[in-house]
Length: 590
Image (tube, rainbow, N blue to C red):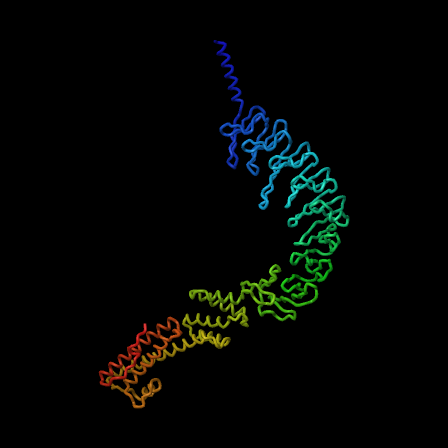
């Protein structure tokens, strides 16, 4: 019994020792994945929180690391020095018994989707596995492998100091046994390879065939492409910008120009833009210099099918695409202007900035801060004058200072009225002064409008309104004076007759009375005529021509005339000398 108890205690002590010999450590990555490592001596295993085994101790892992980004996988290294890859659930992707080194690589591509690879190494030899761990390139032949820099993607491989190319399936395109260096050039969806060997350069196509055989004439060569036209760019030492055609024939010698770029029309290259120092010229696709590089700028207008170049004198001159002189496009001074072949302006506008847009075959023009497109014939797409006028016109009356500024800007940038808005601008300036109560300035601007557009009905109506108000004011003053005189005579008991001077005045300003009508009737008729004129103006079927302010004045004047007519009529009746009443004494105006 005592021996059994000692044996039980010994077994329990051993169990506790084993338990305490294992160290469990929690790991949490930034993608919130939680796992636990349990170490026993030199080995380690991965477990879940619930102690479920992910990577067992039997694998013999010396280290386990979880890569939260970008792979989201476990990378393990065994005590034997091999590496392997496991999914988070413990599924083995690459067994830790095959490769000494494993590196995860990923290509991000929004068009074709992301691609995952594992670059592996064994004893200095490089290979590649796909995302499921299947071997694409065995780590036997190549000493290094890497991706090409851009699409379409390839593997660049190296062996014994020579470089080669494999596609993503592992197929060898260029064997690493000839070229010392290979540079990949992606052109649209095609790819070409610049190759070098023993100081010579060449070009291979995407199938690995040499399309520019190795030559020692050039120090570098690479493909270039403009839409459908492919050509070679070549250089000799520091002499750059040489060009060869697709057959390897030299078109432009390296170093002849500081710049030589192929331009195209409808997808086909059809001239080279060249530059020497600060000056530009043109070569044909055959490399013939058709416009020497002596011009400050040069462009091609597909609209006119011509080249336009700016000379050192500041003039824009044009030459047709077959390189025969044709017509001039623009001349440059402090401002910019479009002109025809003879130098005659295509429009009368001097722009602050005029820029040719070859993609649209049109010009972008800036004047006084406003921008528009100008066609090669000189017409503006959205006239700048119209932009300025409409901005001013649409402003509320509370912003009259801004209106005034914009209308004057229009008159300043277009003194010749080429946009056709100056008459309206002058009329609207008159309205601004009219609203300020300055009728004299308003009349001056209305008359400037009529000087440009004699038949402008708006300006005529505005002038008529001012004159009508002034005439009404004079009549009101006369009526007021007569009323005051009549009241004074009544108060003085001076009788019912005006003196000769007033009689003469009444005859000139009221219906004539050859029978020497008494002064009651004459005074009444003056006010009746005033009431009639005002009533007709206020009820005109074509609408009232004045402002709301002047209408109020006219309504008040009409009511005053009616009051005077009623007063005179009452006094005449009391004197036993009734007057003939006007229908306008009882008319109603609100």
